Length: 130
Image (cartoon, rainbow, N blue to C red; front, side):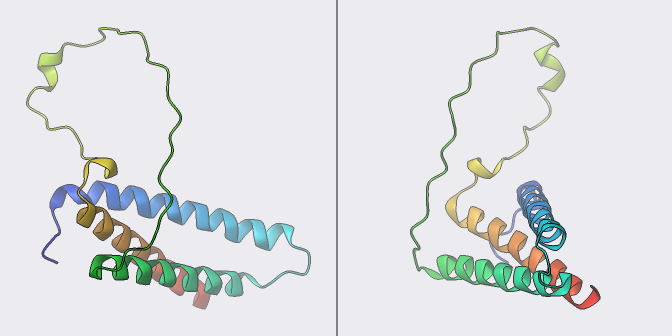
């Protein structure tokens, strides 16, 4: 991968963990609350297909196809009162961690592709185990 940079590991891990937890909550909610619902293996298979679709759409976006996406809306947050808790000189040598919003578009696409592929693999294995 020619676009991979080491600082992209943190956003990939955060995206993969968030999507994994949301998908597991969905899996457990369907199994628990749907009376006479599908087997857990079938729900895991559905999530496998869903993550395969997401991975393929991100791959197409990386290849040049633009799919309209909803923009991320964040509510305005109140500013906290300024407080001096530590001295700034303690942190001058450390680089701040890179967030997903600070990445370029091709790096965002790669992070999304890798996190979707990771979740695809997890639910593919889960669909055979459950």
